[in-house]
View 1 (cartoon, helix red, strand yellow):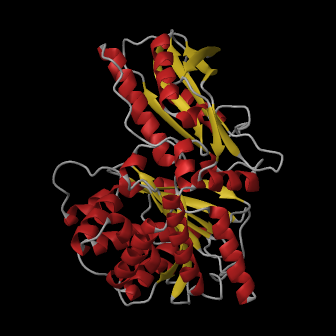
View 2 (cartoon, rainbow, N blue to C red):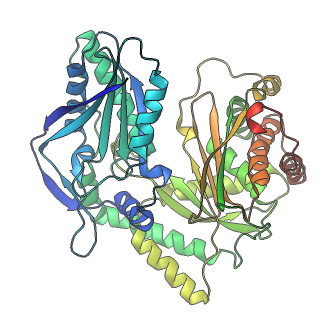
View 3 (tube, one colour):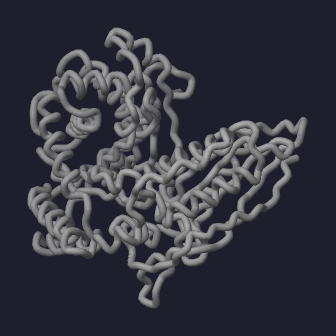
Length: 478
């Protein structure tokens, strides 16, 4: 039987301060208000890491305290004012309860099951942001010896890249404790309160004004009609498929090198080639998500920085290579115009809809986090090895939802060696078979693109083949 107890971690950071929300925090705040009490997977981000041998629970708690003292976002509450608007209040000192789960000798429960259950519980319970710190920690021990450390952090306090930074920093702190070394210094990074002040400065406002000018330009180019319904929707209406592939990871890098561009641009071009098979217009609405970490002072910041940039995404051409040029232009523009006040951008969009006398067409979102992974060391596999790698591809249905804000979400994550391609779609636009076929088609198109350009007619053939059931018969795809 797993024994559960609580431990306390205190932190003394020396200062308490209050500010309005940053642009990234404000966007997350608004999404939370729109959906809660319904939980979406990105509301709470979870990570786990091993604890080095020779450490005691108190050693782990000491490193958690170090982490809290370094990052103001982790010791921030987000109270709502009388008008319902959020703010951020950083605590200078406080106490955090840590869950400790001990597995006695001989207990049949595996640590994998402990981690899965712990992260599921932490990730499905909303934070009380006005009173609760936005991170929860759990330590799994065996006969009192720490084995694993898990945490769940609110998207208000960290985006996916920020959560990865926290996991990496905790790993470094624990290793230093094991080796008897002093904690390594924190990497220099802007704290959220300072970022909020910058965003209201003249330099910050110039970024905002430029972003809104770009948005107005894109809105003028959007098509009148939305992406078309193509089938009777399933219940629940929105399904998310996920394909995990070693072959696609290698193929995208080989194709990007051949095309002299980035893997993110290459993946966007392949995505657009498939969207073009069911999109009649020469452009379609696409939100391109940006991590906003290009400037040095934000590279190691732990806060919610990601923002989406609306693009009138052009899909005209004859080959995937033609679409690479459009994708490169759109991605570069998104990187330049991804820092802005989201509420002001919403007003611009509403004004555009009123001027047009109709709602703006709703399209999709593209969020590539996989391309930020470090490249594997050593020589790249030969293109001839791709077919063998594809034999390990897996597919799953990790999520279904009654409602989403858009009909199409494409997401890429995973590890350096294995990409996880995710597609959440309205089943009135893409049936479940279409969703699965779309993801397998991305893999195959990338594999062919690694060798040579692929015609858009060939893209249609590949998609039709996979969505009509010609999919490798792995046990988890049936």
